[in-house]
Image (cartoon, helix red, strand yellow):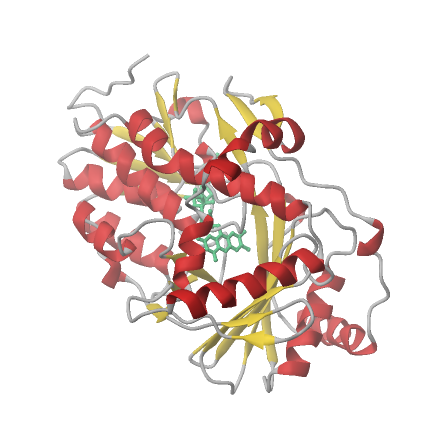
Length: 414
Ligand SMILES: Cc1cc2nc3c(=O)[nH]c(=O)nc-3n(C[C@H](O)[C@H](O)[C@H](O)COP(=O)(O)OP(=O)(O)OC[C@H]3O[C@@H](n4cnc5c(N)ncnc54)[C@H](O)[C@@H]3O)c2cc1C
């Protein structure tokens, strides 16, 4: 069924995250009356000071050029381009994937401070004439565009934001102990750092993973760390059978547009918001655009995730070695990251196994059918005793929390 909104009807959007605000801005610029409803008090409140990476490897085009072409302004928020990272192998060896001047990714801050990407998108929306209603909860059937973010948990990430004297850096660590099934990272921008660990297997007492990860980074980098706050949240990995359902456009994570492999969902959120707006304004069909440009990437990320789920640190070590060999051959570390999202016949042929082995059919409350990736169970090897330093870091955080250190995630985010 084709979804239609008559040209003089106001458009209602659920959620003032990146996907909702991207759609809202472009619709308002296209002359439509737009209302966005956001249950939280402000855009970015879900993340509160988290650093996130806007990737530049799922397309041959620079993402900021794409944004400008759609009518979004990437200069409306602070971003820091990185063309080199520390790649930390599971055996603690550190190597350096390097890319050309175009950079591999940009780090942006999520939150309610002026320089955050969420606030940049909010300013763009307001300047275009969008009406944002904060502190207002709505249901999907009251809205045309559903941009309400994740519902279920397939994975979680926890981090600590801290003051530091270390120079700007990003480090990416493949380590099955500190980040079960996934990776941890360190990002430092202008005196503020974030250490985050991602758990792709469900754990009890999750803070011990973060404390141990912080202990690891402290041992290997001179951080001079002073905790500020702890941040985190969940990721929902689902492939729906439709992206326009019962006359509603599902964008961003609410539409299952998220990267199963690493959890890089911001680019999908902004892109899908722009695609929905283009469709409503009379351009190309959202369903077709998403299926042509985004679903193949989400599918290959699911295949890659299934492969990653089959390996532990030995497999991670092979990946890290292969990445560096590939860089020596091509002179650019980004070639490997791009290759990951351009599957050959072998990886494509794994899709039926991935569907069967990793995804579960599910019917959502709104009637949509999805293939959902459930949170994996923990493994025996996930149970280990914390180090003395990790316990000290945990105690340090408890003291800091008592004196006002905030945590931006709760039971709902796990
Ligand atoms: C800890 C963490 C780290 C991450 N790191 C990265 C990264 O480095 N790079 C990257 O690309 N991606 C990253 N992601 C993923 C990325 O943040 C998300 O994919 C992206 O923000 C999704 O945007 P969205 O607009 O779909 O949803 P959201 O940003 O979740 O926005 C949805 C909004 O809808 C509101 N809402 C929900 N229900 C209602 C309702 N009933 N009524 C009104 N409002 C409602 C919510 O409050 C929220 O503000 C990370 C995610 C987490 C949790």
